[in-house]
Image (spheres, each protein chain N blue to C red):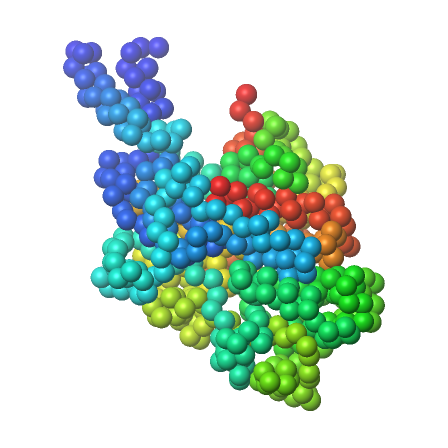
Length: 424
Length: 111
């Protein structure tokens, strides 16, 4: 080997020939990237922007909550078999291990023209790239009387895990003997398609032990169970015979908090003791307020190859807020996957590279039918360049054949790993 | 003559090395292709940990004790139906053979 050849190889190995150009690296290192919202989407995006840029990107995460509380697994807290500490993770590993700057505040407004974000303290931050991952907003006005009833604590949503998760469990535990727990489900799409049915299982599991004459009433605005239909119906029939009543095509329009009466669009009124009414949902408030929700005013259209909003350049939107591609669920797992595609695309763009032409997403969702046994649904979504969307791969994905305790172990394995992958 | 040619290259190497020191990551630089490969392997991280380093005793089978060849054999087994499982047979069928090879190479134990 002559010296020139040797030097050429060394230079290549150090990345001089094959990768970053000088100006592109400067762009990646200089860009201010703000991530708004520290859920499964935002936290993962912040971490992976650092990982994919070999820790060179400047990343700030803005999240009002001091700790992360997982929505997945929170139905087990509603059902009383687990506690909040078991589903709560700190944010500080993102700063300690990955160099993400964290600001525990809310974002009041985003100015896409000036590329500025205003925080609740009044402070403003400028950005070159913003990632908006605010989850869902609950459209309380879609059910008459719900906003006030929820404010007064007569009804609870517990659909954003936190204080209401515990409060709802307490209401269930305090329910009169033989009382009825009613959960209502809005028309899809909503956050976590199997979530309400899993919750019905968890409440039934609790009642079976502590209030065996109690009832669980599921009022579903949809034509049928939205996810894992056969598995849930079988679980209700076999594990909780006579306890769970499922009523499809029952759209809740109003609630009378004084008499705990639920009014339906078509059918007669229903009374219950504990009311868990889930209203229609939309993109998170900040996304709607910023004018990003350009799909019927409710969801955010994005370019799926990089999750950039179609309404505003340099704002990428992740997770439950987006208008979904076919068969793409609004789930924490999916938000984590969106985040990785967006993070890789932003690193590529700021490095003056082509964005990955063939990104892939997966989804895995475990549901507990009691405190130990679990069923799953899984899917793989490959980007289709011709149709500019993600499509599931024929023959892939699917459901569990039946609930098992092995999948119960895997469900906790999933939880511990996704929390570590997003926040650890 | 050789000395003349050498200078700019050495200078470039020095600059690169200095930049490398400023980055706290393990690799100095990456190509677009390497980034795409990392992003593809990251689809596995939700269940098997960032860079395949799963949470010990978290409940999910760990894969970071397997070589790339062992991972690829398993993934292909799940895809073909030769290996049984819960979710993995369903997920493996969603990836091309080339993608599975990339994932195995990315996540396999470095020997």
